[in-house]
Amino acid sequence: MPIKGTDVVKRLPEAGKKNCKECGFPTCFAFAMKLASGGATLDKCPYLTAEVKAELEDALAPAIKLVTIGAGSNAVQIGNEEVIYRHEKTYFHPTAIAILISDKDSDAVAEAKIKKVRDIQFERVGLKLKADLIALQHESGDKAKYLALVKKVCASTDAGLVLICTDVETLFAARDVCGDRKPLLYPITKENIDAVIPRVKQSPTPLGVKASSIAELVPLTTKLKAEKIDDLVLDPGSKNLTEGIRDQTFIRRAAVKQNFRPLGYPTISFPCFVAKGGLKEALAASAFVVKFAAITVLSDFDQHSLLPLLVQRLNIFTDPRMPLSVEEKVYDIGTPTEDSPVLITSNWALTYFIVSSEIEGSKVASYLLVKDTEGLGVLTGWAAGKFTGDSIAPFVRKCGIEGRTKTRKLIIPGLTARIRGELGEALPGWEIVVGPREASEIPAFLPGFAANLKK
Ligand code: SF4
Image 1 (cartoon, rainbow, N blue to C red):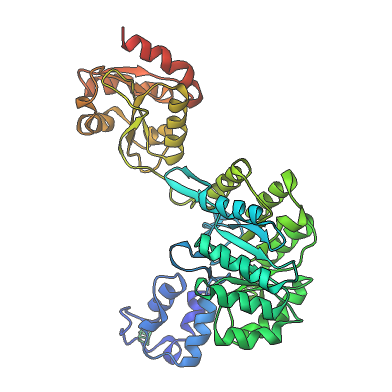
Image 2: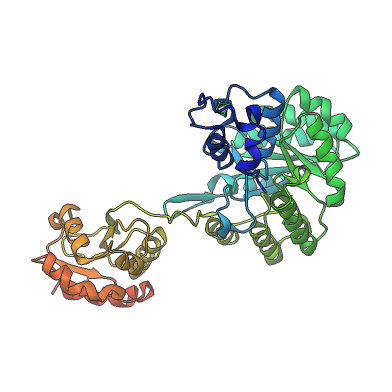
């Protein structure tokens, strides 16, 4: 639970009664309230002692720490979450999806997996969806072989890396090969933590902390935090999917509801180890995306197994406070001509995506006019007065469609049939046609409509 403004004010100068206004707020109380809601920063008050500043910094930090793996444009941020359920606010950083490459894999297998991370991408509602990380596992016992794999991956892709190696010497030798990428080093355990600490203090990098239970994680993260090593990712050592969901949920609840700092870090999950391939592994990954894992590692994927996972992740990590929307304009579906159908819909991204997909599926080149409804679907947009005859007509006039079509027939969504009359009056010269109620009916409707246009 984040600290309240009323608790912050008790720590401000002269117990919140100095009221000098130097922070830009009229009173210490106003500053405290803004600070607690994230609208101000501690540096605005010049009178905080170092001790109070450190205490407040800790108290105001998100329940789950933000950790960055990788560097540059491919850096992956995880954590920084504040809630258990998305509807309480939003989730901030999507689960990073990693593919596992072992140094026992053949060159051909390793190269194929690298290529998948580089090349398999999908575009949906204007966003690029792809896997994020490559996890490199040392299994062969041959240090040179592992280092060669790390070098090969670095030369082939700039994806972020998770280095999985139980031998500390080899782990840090691999880190030195790719240190500029800030890889996640895993596993840090009670057996190797003392050897790891001085090396990480010398050259900071994120650590994946592994224990055989949640209880065993706590002294490890506490020890690292005391050494000012705080970029941590937790693995509670779950042995199967049931334990995995239980542990992930426990950690999230302890961090968010109890503000229990030793567990206030993002987590890593391994469907590749708990389910070992196939549909079971895909389902385990899906469960971990829903249940709080910040990283999930797959043994392999292809287009067909990755797409549903990416779409699920997109849905879960979409901010429910802000509808996804697309730009208001004319979209060409295929290569439309002056005889092509003209349809109109709202700019909720999901509506646009579904309608444009169905038009593509009909194989009829068309113009799709997308009216700005502030991200609302057509029916909600109509109810809010943003998808009405009076608001659509000016858009049709100014969007440029009148110079590109001679049909002058505008297909409106069947759900908004009631605007037909008012839109016809507001758009003289156009015939308003009521289209299907459901987007899924477009492929059956559009070919016949287009054929009639050409008669
Ligand atoms: S600068 Fe500090 S002491 Fe002055 S009003 Fe703001 S919070 Fe209070």
